[in-house]
Length: 544
Image 1 (cartoon, rainbow, N blue to C red):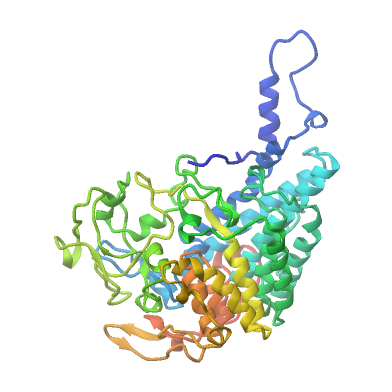
Image 2: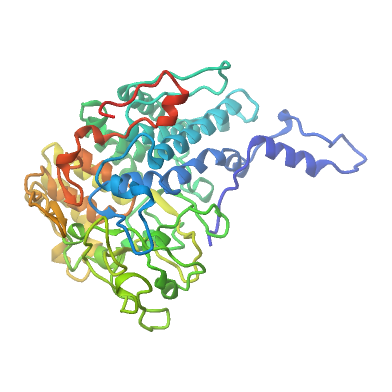
């Protein structure tokens, strides 16, 4: 259970509660109302007031068919194959894997509408603070507005990354019938950079519990580095030097550090991790919406309920793509710590058996094989265990979700150095991240600049019972670095973005995804059909 969290309230609720709490029969003074001028919010009040601006991050990323799926299930690490108990759902997961999604698809819809909900909440709060409806002293007002502007920019970053050309809807008060104009990806990029850089000086430098799960200065710099890292994709112009500079701001601040064991970033009680820069606070007892954070339910087979003493039966489903698992060094602890495989047991050590399909009654032992996206059994595919599954968990894990962490800062700087001709300096940083994964064999942690310049070890090509081709990964520029990103950040909702940056997403085949059947236009999603129907100012992205 989390030791601290901020409660999400609107200013109206806060003022109403204060008013109700003061409606008592007192002899002195009129306590029946609290007027805005008399409300002087504390740090805790500010956190509560702006909390509604943050809720959409959890919803857009982790809810069903959210951004996590859009980034991972379309890439080369994760697949949701048909299982004996279903997981077909109209073919949406297969089409995501094969890059055949449509503007009408739910994942296309949810990424757009949930993220714009975050934008709208921020617009409202910015308006309330800026106009004085939420009264604050000048310093608090400036800091709050800066934080909200960066938070809103983070939502536009998601929209820019997924959809490219999106409306910059930043006004709260608009005329009746107003429909926003569509902006270019370049315009959205420029706006996001401007909002973050103009806000930096007013952001808190604190990493205190009051700022946990919020954008302080270092979280803003990390987001800025992430946007510069992908600037060439977004605008056609690389910004490696700017990416390195933003990373250095975080590194030189000395506020964050790597965990000695990567697993500690993802344990249930991870809110005190020195590696988490911006995390989503989640607690299964308080964040109760059905799909708040249920990766364990989507990956474990039903019998695994007895392994973790879960209060609900898991559903089976997604697993690792075997070609990806094959890239790991067997001594890499990120293989053993991040994935669930082999014979499964109850919490008391008894063997677990399959309960459905062709293997009913046989031992449930996960193997690194998946016959097809159209057919698989309970035993097929390594399952996901990067986030600790606490004994007695319900359908929502209580681990906080690290959106931005210090290892990413180090790796972003390393990539910037690699791409600007400083491969040996990049290798030193990559080695720093690798060291904890090879504690038992330190020599394997070391990587050289020359190795980072090599291609990928991923054996790309079609790999199913009825399809096979060999494309390999040796031709991928800096492919070894792309591998490093996969080994460190798998299951963290980002793989699509990394593959696009390395030119792989639309140009390589893997498992049942045939690159020859789709095109590079699939590097951004279509504008959802519903958005086009309600706003005539929007034009569909090319290719759709």
